[in-house]
Length: 244
Image (cartoon, rainbow, N blue to C red):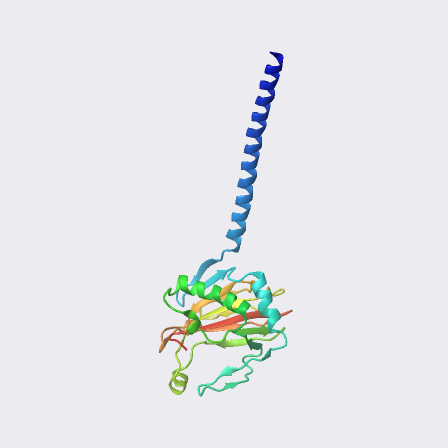
């Protein structure tokens, strides 16, 4: 009889241990799930409307640190003095734009994956029916050394340029910050909107240049302010009204 009681007692202890361990496992699983979910939320980008006059949006965490590092590192050794486009379609050096730039290799598989994040944003926030790769110009990486800048300018083309070159107008611009700038400077400044945006690695600005090809927003005037120390890296994405 004592042996039977002992076996029953041991069985009850075993059942109790199983129940306790099961509860502990559930709690650990919940904590792991919550930690993973917090990580996912941090990685997911958020969108803030800064000014509705040009649909100016700030996109946080559009690209990852790894994306930004790859774009910067793969551009080294290829930068040349940035140019501006004249009404007759020729590209020339200008004192107004003193940065350096490089058009990325569109056949690079990593570049394709990065650009797909941009196209996902456009599909989710502009038009899901377009093949955005056909509407975007060659993607340009820009580098600003200390003191270099791009004075106030518009991204849209003049009517003379459109007539002479038979190209679709730039409807939207996206500018992605590829690094944090040391100290002050390096901001993107919209003087007509009184908006100044500080670079943040992986974040992006997105705005509309024109409502129609010949109806463009003067409030889209913007300037790349010079970094006071260190370098600033960015990525220009210009999006046309029609396929190019």
